[in-house]
Image (tube, rainbow, N blue to C red; front, side, top):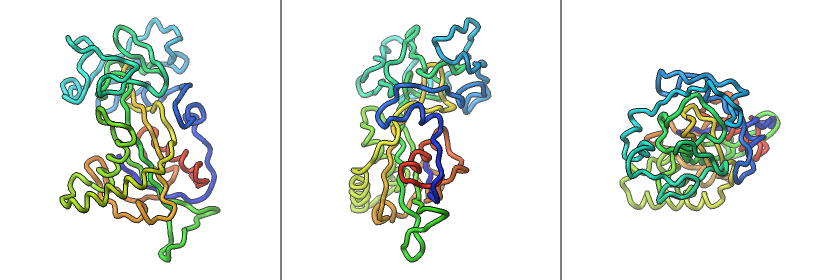
Length: 296
């Protein structure tokens, strides 16, 4: 997913998600999720089993709990996804590095019940993997690239009480065996520069050099659980979000963007609380706004 945005004045209160969970390294405490409960499951017409707020935690007894079992057909036999738990020969090593797959959660050690990992935040009303490929944590990366919004004469634009940067947001899955930092660079090059369709080796090398130099200054914004509508009791999204800020606007901030396969209309866009973003991306943008003393 790709978005871009612009800052404009200062007035931002952290979402409860970040109040509880963001310490820039890993998440010790977990909050109550909402987007993956009491609704029709993402990309389907399957209704989740109802889970009241006071019955989300696994530590709370819920004898009548009957989660709906669902794994999307597109995932069940996909070569990039895990097989069913009961499949002969499949012996996943949860809570550790499993070959080329990282099954460690930013939330800490998660429980295993009947061979299946349990969502660290609690019940979702659905078991199985839904449309997620991995049992347990499904790791994503979110590079948040920002620049200051400038007037036509090159001066930083002031909107309201403070200066505002323009933010670009790229999101994607971490490939098996790939480091988060490498995934950040890959996602940005694929989604912002459409590097997979660049035929010139010289141009590719220039893009790779520009991105590598810019990403050396990446700052951790959040690492942890994402309240994502695709989450289930046994599979959930986690992300590592980083901010790469181009203070002068002369590096990534000066580039012409080209949308990749997952990015629809990649462009620089003003940051706003009204922005329509997927899952918890808006909370991440809010955290970046706080970091730069910018308006939300």
